[in-house]
Image (cartoon, rainbow, N blue to C red):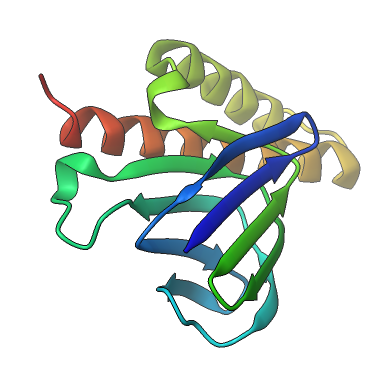
Length: 141
């Protein structure tokens, strides 16, 4: 089946895959070829991609995504999100520093708007660290 992962800055992934696991507002869904048509909301989290049925864990690809929309139609899956980062592109030290800044911003927030923005940043950086960790653990040389 064809998986397209599209962000505001363009296509991040457009390939044939066997399976994709997507975080949605109703929980994670696994999508395989021949999935029933569906339109749902993606939530921030980890997308896992298996290219071939027989691929082991060290062949999976991981993406950290923000929320968006998922459209499944036959053997075509389109995920439209604001941001998506591939596991190999995330620098853990930089992301950890950004998380630390976001936590400090959250702890020092003086109003609800600042607090909500800080919570969003904390969530985003925590997901990015999770994806970087998954990539590192499953793609050891």
